[in-house]
Amino acid sequence: MADKFDRGLERLKSFYQAHQSDPRLVESYGYFFAHPFTPINLKRLRAIIDFSASHKSSPRLFDACCGGGLISLMLSMMGASVVGVDANEDEIAVAQMARNELGLTSVEFQCGDAVKVIGAAPPQSFDQVLFAYAIHHVPQYHDLMANAFNALKDDGRLIVNEENRSSPVFRLKHVLRGVIQRDTDDEHQLSFSELTLLHQQTGFRIESAVGIDVVPLPMRYQWCLVMESCKTP
Ligand SMILES: C[S@@+](CC[C@H](N)C(=O)[O-])C[C@H]1O[C@@H](n2cnc3c(N)ncnc32)[C@H](O)[C@@H]1O
Image 1 (spheres, helix red, strand yellow):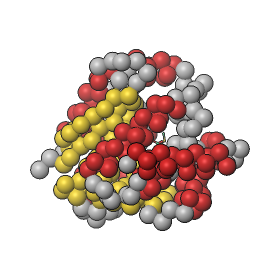
Image 2 (spheres, helix red, strand yellow):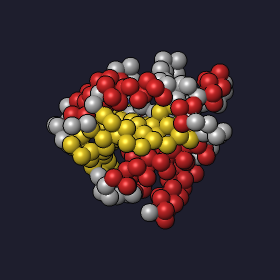
Image 3 (tube, helix red, strand yellow):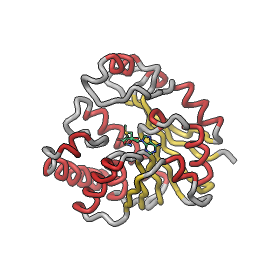
Image 4 (cartoon, helix red, strand yellow):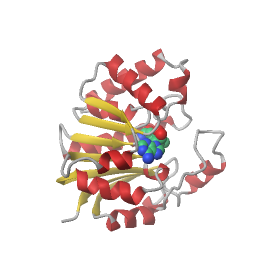
């Protein structure tokens, strides 16, 4: 599995390097190879892949707010069959370009509102649903979670990756926003407790969680959280 991950990452880096002067890719969410926090991004990618692979080897997975598709593409190279959805057509164009150049047929991308697209999926459609840096961009995040619950199989898994508002590193980064990354003003990051409550309120039980940070802190203060949840009966 480590080899597969490393080979996939090399393919994605090669795609990025071949297009790094293309403004669409420079602007795209997800292509973090030249980002100041690349090590954190790599760790979160790894944690997402580990949760997905340890649950099921060839899952059917919905990636909400997939941006330029980097995580969807990586999941597909690991064996998943992926539907990636993003509201921004430029992001989807980058994702499609990468899909085509990498010759990946087990991933498809759609432009649309993830809340509506997953809401329209028949019940029990997916083994896994991924929200990677998605919840803080979607004001209707309760609906997003509830729709994921319906679209997931009974033994499915929800994988949530979020920035933690309670983290001191997040607060510092928040002050520096605009200098170090392209964030928007309407983001609404939740605290560790709020994320835990949101899972409970929408029928999920968090089974495992990892925190990723530049300083060692208790989980509830770690900046980047990756949580794997199952449906409560
Ligand atoms: C920070 S990016 C996350 C990209 C990727 N998931 C990652 O973790 O690297 C957030 C993305 O959410 C998308 N987005 C915001 N609201 C959305 C919605 N309602 N439906 C689909 N995509 C949405 C934006 O276009 C943007 O590409």
